[in-house]
Image (cartoon, rainbow, N blue to C red; front, side):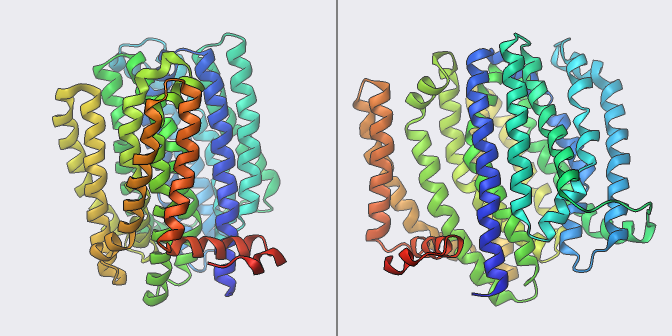
Length: 486
C-alpha cells in the first residue's frame, strides 16, 4: 500500500476518533444539559450563532486551506497568518462588544447584551491556536488533533454541567462553549512545537490571500446561510421555539458534521498531494463517495424513523416538539456529505473562484426557500432546507464532474443501490411504530435496522463493504483478518 494511502487511512481513523469522540462527549453533555435547562436557554445561545460563525469565518479568512493547498508553505507564511488571525479576532470582538445592544434590540431580548460580550471572547482565544491546528493537518498528524480536541471537550463538558447544576441557566451553555476554545488553544500550544516568529510578510499575505480571499467570501456566505435559520426563527418566533429547532439541528449535526468533517479534514490534504493526477483523484473520490453514502444514508434515515422514542427516552417529553424538525433535517442530512465532498474537489484543484461563484448561486435558492417557507412557519423553513440541499448537490456535482470526469449521473448510479437498500431497511424499522412501549420500540428499530441493512449490503455485494474491510485491515493489522473474505 502506498505511503499516501496509508497516511490517509490512518488520518481518517484518528480524525474519526477526534470527531466522534468530541461529538459523543458534546452529545452526552447536551443530553444532561437538556434535562437541567429549559429550551429558552438553548434558544438564547442560538441567537448568537450566526454572529460567532461569521466572525470565525473572517478570522480563518480561507488561510488554513491556502496554507494546506500551498506545497511549500514556510515559517514566514505561518507567522504572517498567525498575526493576521489575532488582529482580525480583536477587531471583530470589539465590533461585537459595542454592537451587543443592537443585537439584543434586534431579538428583543435584553439578556443578550452581557451574553454577547462574554461568549464572543472566543474569537480572540481561538485565533491563538489556529496555526498549530493547521500545522498538524498539513503533517496529517490527526492523532495529535484528536488528543487535543477530545480532552478539551471533556473538560468543557465538566464546566458546563457543573454550572448547570449550580443553576446558572444559559451561562452553563456559555461556559461550555468558552471552555472548548480555551482548553483547545492551551493544549494546542502544549502539544505543538511550532512558535511564531516576529514576521509579517506583505508578499506572503498577498500570495495566500489570492487563493484564500475567495474561500473567505465563500466561508462568510456559507456560515451566514448555515445559521440564517437561527436568525430568522429567533427574530420571527420565540426563544423557546428557537430552542426546539436548535436542539433538533444539533442532534442532526452530530453524525452529519462528524462524517463530513472527518472526510474533509483528511481527504483535502491527501487529495491536494495528487491534485494534478486526475485519474487517481477520480478513483479515490469515487471510492470515497460510495463509502460516505454507505454510512450516511442508513444513519440519517434510521434516526428519522426512530426519532420520537429516541427524543422521549434521551431528552425527555418536554423536547418532543423538536421531533418533526429533526426528522426532516435528517432527510436533508442524507445529501450533505455528498455535496460537501464535491466542493472539496474544487478546493483541491485550486478553483476557489469557482467555489465562491457556486456559493453565491446556491444561496440565492436558500433566500427563495426562506421567503416561500415562512408561509408555513418553522416546518416550511425546514422543508426548504431539504430542497436546497438537493439543489446544492446537483450544482456542486456538475462542476466536479467537469474537473475530474466524474459526472453527476455517474455519482447517482454509484449511490443508487445503497439508497434502495436504505429505503427497505427504513420500511422494516417502521414496524417498531406499532410497539407502544418506547424502550421496546427503540430497541426493535435499532436491532432490526442494523441487521436488515448489513444483510442487504452483503447480499448485494456493496463495494463499500470490501473497502471498509480494507481500511480496518490497515488500521488494525492482525492475523485474524486473513480469514475475513468478501
